[in-house]
Length: 124
Image (cartoon, rainbow, N blue to C red; front, side, top):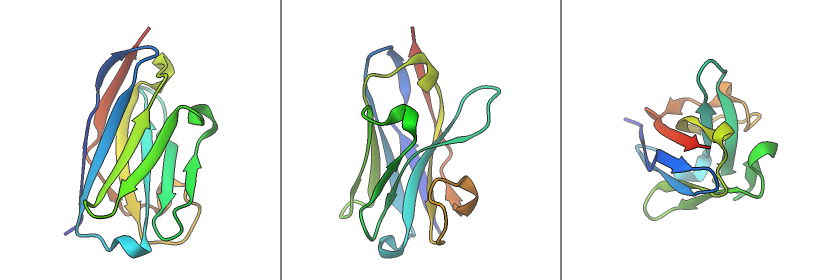
């Protein structure tokens, strides 16, 4: 059974940092991509960052480039999202997701597995 569990969210002032973690189990990491998505109140879910597990290629939405970093720890089956220089518009519930399908890595529709989400709140 596939399980994704996020942690590390919280309340931080603008300009601060948070590190989100996603613990994955039940996945074959050699054939998947993993991503982070977020959903702000009254807004649609949006892509934040992703990593192609086989190639190591990284993908970011434009608004977080230079501020967020996605990384992985193969041995621990973990994916991380280091978030620096946080802004109030980064507020939302952050979800970890995984897919074994080939497709547009930024598209939430290709992801089969989702965590329960962790709240990130950035105060101004």
